[in-house]
Image (tube, rainbow, N blue to C red; front, top):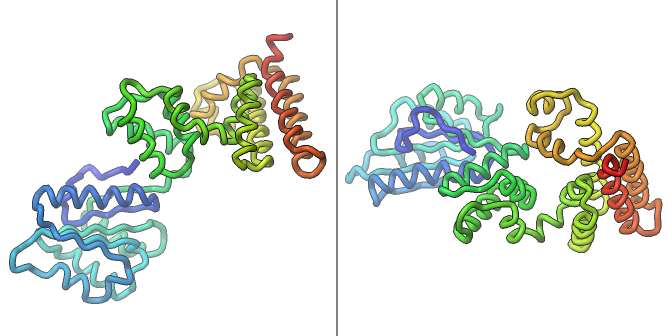
Length: 329
């Protein structure tokens, strides 16, 4: 989710949105425009790309108006502005015009850093819009979306939604909005499953989760759906391998807080909690059996066998049985 500076007035003379997450950048712009139009319904909005902002253009856009109208000037990909235009922008930052809000969208990084530094030095209101590459960040985003809509969703529901939708924040936000509009009361994992079951079951990681949890029938059902919807067998063997290795890593680790274990094992904290639940019933021998099954399946889907689907089914059944080995012992 976008992080803002303490002085969070959308009508500040300059807003600097920094990052590469398109949804958050667009929302930063929308917030400024909405605030400006709430103050003046006739606000003039100019949304420009670097090739539309030539030397002298900014001066024209920010020159005093006969009617003193409010204006919002949005400059996207500010890091790509020409050197001459950057000089114009820096000059403007020293004496911003009244009733005009300038919004600079900058990717961050080295390119165009001089402009970034100048905007910060000028006291810009800053909105951080980083690319969300970590599952934990997307999970936090999903929770915040439900909160923003005044809706309650269980942690399991939020995780299921992230697992089903994937990394596209726009789709995640849209899914949250749909669930909030359609469902009364607390949104739980079962509700998410009903809405997004096809996508969730087509995930190779869903196959792996059900297998390491010892849920044979559900794992096989998810596997068949995945294959039917075009998921590559090698992705499924990879997910199975990750699932079993996570069990093995955590079972051999010293006890501790999820954050400490996450650093030690190279997993996000949310995954530590999930694997702890999944590892009940596992034994060291079971982990060894499961890893051999994954290796056999991997060879089978890469040309070492005649039937990749059978190789995967065999691995899933073996892993699910290994997950219950302690109970049988």
